[in-house]
Image (cartoon, rainbow, N blue to C red; front, side):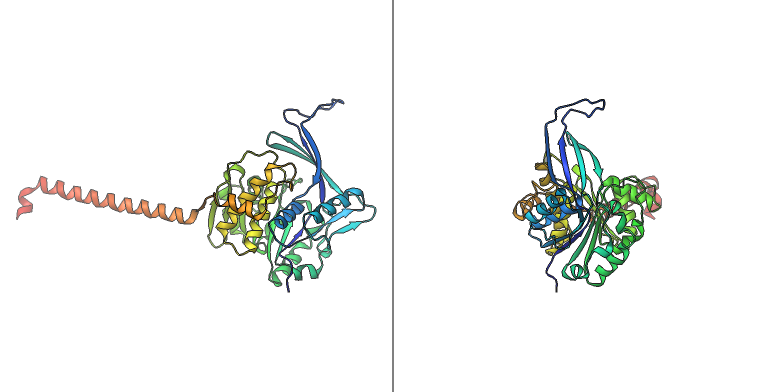
Length: 361
């Protein structure tokens, strides 16, 4: 019997968030003054877990930290946000990962020390955790090197238990955007990349010609997954293997700091689906959660509760692209029929005017 909505399997680390403003780092022992700096809970999986818990989902995390003070910091922050850390591991003599996020007026650069990031194996995910969950979410696929070989079996085990599944691949530091991901997609209900990641994954799967989010989404859906592509200020796009194609708008919000916005999007989407909402409603919730999370420093500080997310989601629009294209094609066909009929009528009139005697016989 399930007693957990969402099981997140992924990396654990802290983020050092530095808001540089107009300052750019310079070597040569040059010291600069920046606008702000803070240490917060980092990583895609933990931010998604915290966002879902904030929305009211029952969430547990599986990840690995070292036995240092930073590992305790990470686990404490998860617990404070209502995430169950029972299945998290602390490795003796190992160091917890850390990312330095340099923000600059909405853009950012990320420098990561891996530590125990990527040291989680499929065998570290207990069967009882799968038994207790309704959905399995895997974060930062390309960082999870020790997970790659066992993930197909883990996803199959989840599917056999009736769980739905998702992966947020994040960026690939190795730049291949493969590592076995394309062949996994038939086991993944929702793949959740941003536009740049989606284009690279489509190319890695043998379709280098995809030049837009829509084309990449079509490629990924053809491989057997529901592709949800996050497009920043342009909203998000969903393509499913069954032909469903939707686009959601993004709220008009000026971001203060964008760390983890895509992970909060994931939290909104998955939580909405787990509460029985349809795809359109889930996309609106996801877009709202991603936008609202940018109103504070770090990935979790400004994550909304359900009421705040729902209020903003209600202002967003979802377009059924398949239906729109069908309506457009129907209108074009109808216009063509009308034009043909008009041309025929005109030709008949011209014929009557040209041969009046013949038409009177």
